[in-house]
Amino acid sequence: MIRIKLSPSKIITFDGETLELFDDYLEDSKRVHIAHIKKIAVEPDHNGNPSLSLSTDGLIVRLPFDQTQMDKVTALAGAVHQAMTDLAW
Image (cartoon, rainbow, N blue to C red; front, side, top):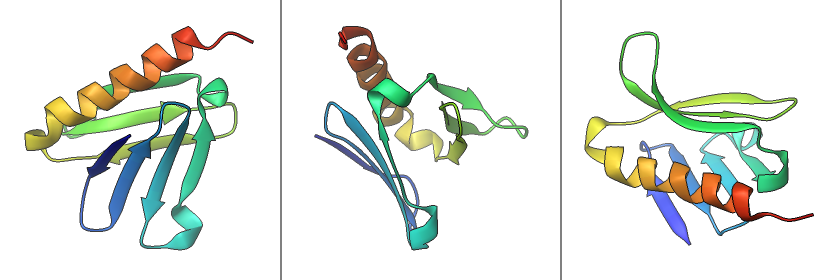
């Protein structure tokens, strides 16, 4: 299980199959199975700050994070990408 607190209000977890995005506003919380993820990447936002970018057919999420969390977030993105690659339907 990977758990990262991106900010005081945003937490992201990955259990090997489901990526969960929690926000202190419940309507902003999301669960996404790896089979539905089209893209996950660490990319700069429009200001050049690091963010985690996630897209599915109906969802695009960009989660900013502090540079000090780069290794953790990059590892998470890599784990999700690997799980997507390993998924055999």
